Structures are given as structure tokens and as C-alpha cells.
Length: 455
Image (cartoon, rainbow, N blue to C red; front, side, top):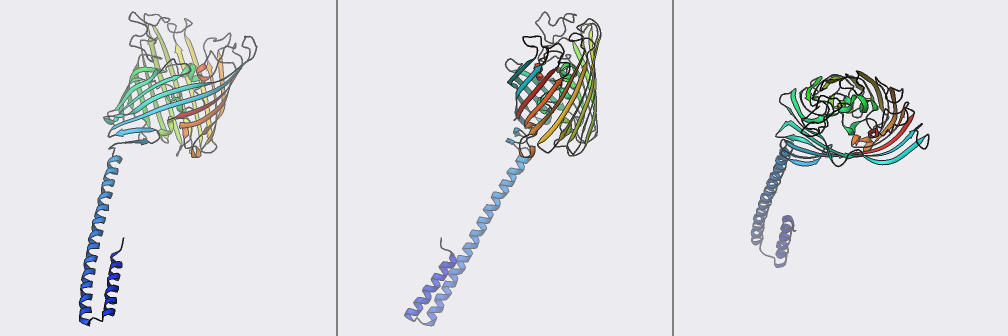
């Protein structure tokens, strides 16, 4: 496109050449120069007007883009990925999720009493496949969570979590539905944020006996960093009431579950629990797993809980106390003590049973991607479980490798390898954590390799 200046120069050249060729009088030349100056002024005015129109258009587009960005930032709506996929519109938010865990397990047992005195089992399994829907509705204070699982010990798709949580004040709220009872901190943490390949033997056979329950609970604090205290008090259908109806222990017989309207899979009439936690320092968000990854300031939390479940004339009482410590340099430490009493009307022996256990575990981030850890726990049963054995130990050492740039994926993509030594074997088949047992309380050694992907 020819510029106005080029046109002007061409016009001037034409005028001058014409003047030279025909030798017009000076008056004619002056008139032509005057007319040419007028044309130049018109072209300059037109160019200035066009520049103003272009600038105005650009300014309007920028204002519109800024307005739309402000709407999105204020919660106007959108979808994308931010530590998980999300769909959002105002106070409505939906976060779908998938947890995939794939295992290889090598299990060595001595004195199995089978065809061979010592036996080794090795193989692969899809250990867990969980689907979840989480988010908020109508207001940011109303949250919901739904989760289903399929995997090695599951037939089809089974419901794990289905609850709503509403904070009606800054520090006060309630939770209603089916959820893991907030009794054991290790059990309450999600399947995807454990330190080792899976939870401890202590949790499976003792501290996690409450499991998922159907409940209504009152909340205080809700892990708000402005409040150093967190507490929850709940009324439940009793320990282990996952996916059951309202019919509890019927009739008054500790060995009977079910009733005239059909079977129920929980053995209690009701339960109650309370848990309190005190944060001496640090941020509550680092209390949501056992690794010190992402810990910017030292953390120390002391917690304790009590559970009482009643069925017929029988009662089961559980007590626990635990502490968690993390440093900004990558060191993590966790310890727990658990006690459980089942009276004569609820125990399997017909007499009172007092079981208890201890756990200590530590971890250290060698660098942002590599973490080493160790765990020791022991369970003391009141009665002999296998032969004359009532004490069972678990020693675990292992390593985590977090994928991504400098381990940026965290728990969302990681590889875990751990070696587990059970001095007296397992108190029974615990295939959910890779232990086969059934070897007369003799030595069992298990090597587990796990890959985890959380979307």
C-alpha cells in the first residue's frame, strides 16, 4: 500500500518536471505549489483521523478482555486443571477424580505347613481404582464428596464416601452421610496420601476398626489456619457401618447381625465418637499427609480421640493419641498409641478383651523427588490369636519417587517400593495390604512395588 508521503513526493516531482519542460511562468508554479500544500494537509488530517479510530478500537477490545478476565477471576465460570480437573460457575464447583494404584507383590512365608515348608508368591494386581466427585454447591460453605471403588477385594463398583459438609459460621459446621470416622488419623487420611504403599498393620487390625460409618457430626475449626484447634463430635450407626441400612444389632446377640426386615451388615445399634487436635505451629494443610514435601514452616500437631460403639448389651471402647511433626528441611515424624476394649457381651471370646498397639514412622526428603521412610508398629492382643502368639510386629523401610519436574507431581504420580518384615507373621490373611499370613505365626517378608496416578 502506497503511503501518503510517497504520493506527495511523486506529485511534487511531477509538478517540477512539468515546470521544467514547459517553462511555465512563476505565478502558475506558485499556484500549483499552493494547491499541493492543501492536498498534503487533507491527507495528514485523514491519517490522524484513521489513527484515532484504530486506537479507539484497540482500547475497546482491551477493556472487554479485562472485563471478561475479572468475571472469570471472580468466579464467573470456567473449566481447567488446578491440582486436579475442575468445572466452575459461581459458587458451584465440580472436581472429578480418579485414583489408580497398580502393585507388584512378592511374599515370602516360612513354615506354611503346605506342600513346601517355605513358600513365595509373586504377582501383579490393580490394587485400587477409585472414582470421586467433590466440590461446592449454592455457596462455598456447602461442600460435598462422593467416592466409589473397585479393585482386588471389591466385586463391582462399591460406594465409599457420600456426605455433605456445611460451615454455617467461620468455625462451626456439620458433616452428614457416609465417611471414614475421624478416630485414627492414619485411617482418616485418604488412600492416595499414605507414606508407604499402604496403611500399617496396626491400622488394619486395630486403630482403623471403626472404618467408614454412617453419621452426623458437628465440626469446630475445620482445619482453618487462623484457628489452632480442630474438633469433631459425631453420632454414628456404630463402627464398621459402611453401606448398611438403619437396622443394627438384632437381636441382642453379639454373633447375630440382621433382623426381620432383612440383613444389616453392621453389628452395633449406635456409636459416638469425639476427636480433638491442637496445632502448636505450622499450617493445617501439611497435616493432610505424612510427607514433609511442600512444608514451608515447621509443623507440630497433637491429637486424640475416643469411640464408643454399642450393640445389644455389648460395648466396644476405643482410645487413641497421636502426634505429627514436620520440618521445612524435609523431615517428618509420626507416632500413635491405640487402645481398644470389648466387653464380654461383644467380644468373640465371651470375656473382656483389651488390645493395644504402638506405631512410629519417620521420613526424609533427600531431594524434592526422592524420599526415604521407615515404620515400626506392634499390636498386643489380649488373647492368643495364632497358637500361643498374641504379639505381632511390622517393620517397614522404603522409598518414594515423585514424578514431575523436581517431584512436582507429588502424590498425583509416584512410585513406591517398600520391604516389610513381620517377625511373627500376620494375625490373619491381610491381603488388602499384601500379607497372606497362615504360617503359624512364623516369619513373613513382603516386597511391594506400587505405581500411583491420581487425576
